[in-house]
Length: 257
Ligand SMILES: Nc1ncnc2c1ncn2[C@@H]1O[C@H](COP(=O)(O)OP(=O)(O)OP(=O)(O)O)[C@@H](O)[C@H]1O
Image (cartoon, rainbow, N blue to C red; front, side, top):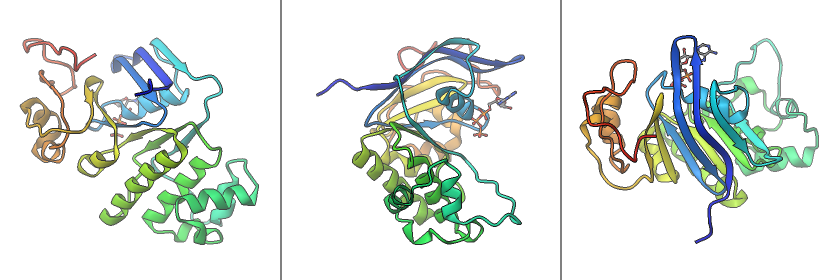
């Protein structure tokens, strides 16, 4: 099998906001052709990590390497547009700086949203809004797609479709994908690599075997752990309410960096 091609490498990255040690010694590689999903409880540092990957935030410590001339497409968590501001899908797509109709139509067609071209952004359903956001992120033909909770505000059928679409886009374009998700169960079938973050990397690996590790239940609750039944990991430590590893437990080995 060919060696994976690194698009972004994070080495021993730390981020502190004053006394809040949000990211602790994070090492992570994002590969071409690979969907990496970041999961973790609220406040675990997922968006902060994405901001580091995007180059919007400089780490307090550690190194971030990006493939030279890497093109990144970013799909934000939410779209906030003043409802009094008239904005069609076409105009919204053009705010990317790309005006060529052929490119805009192709990006919309890739997410099966070409029929929305002249619709108002305000009239779109949750699923349509997310597909248009995804189309905008695709406009520059990115090497890496970064998706911050891409299925937010989408009903359950729409969520499955959207994850399928992301998997198809990765396959067709052979790009890398980094996405944040809270939908542990749904995302499992369309991801290659899962990183469980709670300020540090608790564990990471392929989604495969059933796991009922008590420490995972502690982190996500029983419902979350059940949802992650396909996710194989070795989570051999506990966390306090701040997410710190509790020292009197056996310390994490290869699953925690
Ligand atoms: N610019 C900032 N200045 C100070 N604190 C920040 C800043 N950005 C994030 N934080 C803090 O860092 C912590 C992690 O935030 P982050 O948004 O990365 O978490 P998250 O895992 O994405 O959370 P959620 O799942 O709720 O979106 C939070 O305590 C947040 O308040």
